[in-house]
Image 1 (cartoon, rainbow, N blue to C red):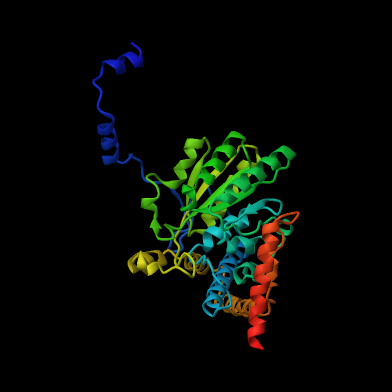
Image 2: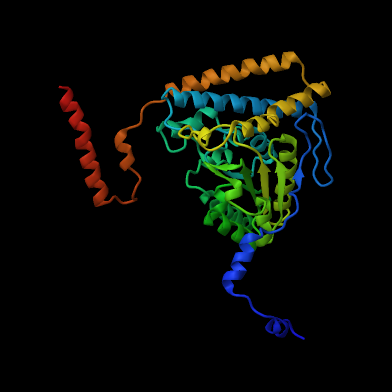
Length: 385
């Protein structure tokens, strides 16, 4: 008997009842598997599929990366509060996800960030001060993407995943063995651009790693109101693997991203990495997280702090002493001072530059707007006389 004939003999429920039943029972799913190599208490654990062996020097290097990145981030936040920056998107709490994944890349890999990947930028060799020009309004990015294979920050949510996929398709056609990484957040995963990128990457077997930092909040929207299944499982529907990693574990993020990149280089296609982490601060400096989440949640995640857990491991292994931590503290303060001085020394941009590079051959409407704005600016000089 065919499936069709069997189905035909069964009484049919109305479509409204079927929809009601589906809505009443959320899809069943097993507890998400979380790759972890370093517990919040700083204890080293093993995973059957992912692991990494690092020297004491390499462990100290990862710790230094996270400490300096956090110090830079704190300085940028302070500069915004002092009126030196127009806006800032903090990465506080996400250092392990960014440093671990960033250090997994090779020099010839190409990275497409959002606007919060300050730690990844550090790993790619971008001067921290150069990240602040756009947020001060003096340039459109501040660095040459091709110098460090690190693209300019992308404000449009999710669009960089399509850029990364297209670039990766080109890499494959060129026959190179490099890979591409696209960073985005849990909120961006609901954008159509991300779904399109997943589909193109799967169909064309593009050597791209989709690295999602699930920091639990898309501005004020919690993940339970964004999706009904664990985020990493979305990859299944497009035909490529997904993995969830402890985003506050720098060792696990390094191991999982390295594995995904090697898979891409072997021509095995894309991977979705979900770094399960937490945004300790505001979405940006224009946001007030106290309006939509409670302090208990933050306190619980503070116990999982990525820097503290690696420090505990370093101390337990005898890989770092107090002199090392004191020296690093001095280095971080010196970097904060340098960044502060660099920002304040940035020259103001030409206000008329906003009309340049809009159209390749000029445009009558832009010319009209330029003239009107010039007259508006000149009116202030006349009033001052």
